[in-house]
Image (cartoon, rainbow, N blue to C red):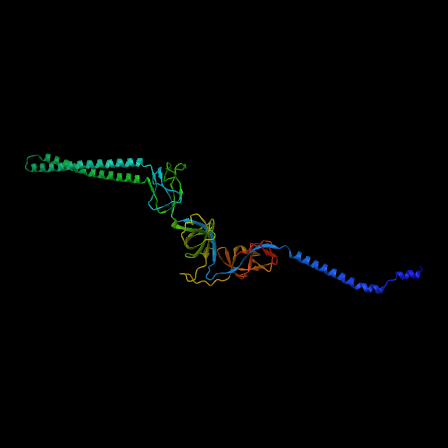
Amino acid sequence: MDKSELLSQLRIDRGANDEVSPPRTRLWIGLATVVLLAGAALAWYLGRGEVTQVAVATAHALPTGGSTSVLDATGYVTARRQATVSAKITGKVRTLLIEEGQRVAEGEVLATLDDAEARAEVALRQAQVEAARAGLAEIQSALANAEREFERQRELEAQKLISVSVLDATRTQAEALRARLASQQSQVKVTQEALLAAKVQLDNTIVRAPFAGVVTVKAAQPGEMISPISAGGGSIRTGIGTIVDMDSLEIQVDVSEAYINRVQAGQPVEAVLNAYPEWRIPAEVIAIVPTADRSKATVKVRIALGTRDSRIVPEMGVRVAFLEEQPGAAGIPAAAPVSGTLVPQAAIRQDAGEDVIYVMRDGEAQRRTVMLGGQRGDERLVQSGVSAGESVIVEAPATLKDGDAVDTRGEAKQ
């Protein structure tokens, strides 16, 4: 093969390349497009971050005529009328007629003490009265006889049949008997008073209910010694039990003195017992106790319960909400109408000194700065920033930010 043939074999055929080039170019362009789209999707996914699972609740409008809280506080149910019942004297319990939870009437016998000594004292005083009365009768008889004798002697002296000295002797005897009579009458009165005192002591061995109520504590047993005065050693009981007048139950709360200006007598209150969180009890402020506790910087407020129920018992924990004054109440100016939406208290958080609520919208968390109003139970009034029907995030995670992807866990709360 000569050089010319070799050179012809090495020559590039331009026509053939022109036929193949366009398909290859389109292939490379397609591959580049796919790579770019995959990169954009990956960048979007990485930028989107992990989806946060949250619980949501639906904001709803404040009911017409609803009242919101201007102040919340905690306290306890207390009884204005309760007593630790004891005997007036020291003695041994003979019978005990009470049990915890028992209702008793005023004056009902609750217990009796050993009364052997008291009965013996009554018998002794009764005998003394009878002896004094017998002595009184004897003196009265002797006085009557002395007075008759004096009259006879006076007649004889008038007839000059006896001397004056004999008449004086009979007069003196009669006057002495009169003095003894007066003394014996006083003695009879003394013994009668002693008998009365002994009967009172006997009656003191019976323990009665001072008022109608319910027995909450049974503190003694038959055979134990009780005393109205504490002996200090612990071996002698100071009472047989405790009675509470359930009709005198009320609520007492300590309100910070910085907010006591939001409370006034007659103000409506909504109370919720810790034991029954779904039960809202209507109540009303009785009075603000006119003294402050300097150690706690609080003022005590008394609240009357609007209902009587066996579920309400002394020393129960209770949460109260002091409500806005109702328009037209006596001595209270009409308040401006309140509007807004109610959301769970758990949906509100503080962020940079602002009240903030996160709303779930199109799968994202939206940060809303809100203006808060009063409280109504476990809900808070939002006057601006959230509309009725929107889904608010309850107990939003501390790391949640505006625009984060969120999804609900379980059913939405109402």
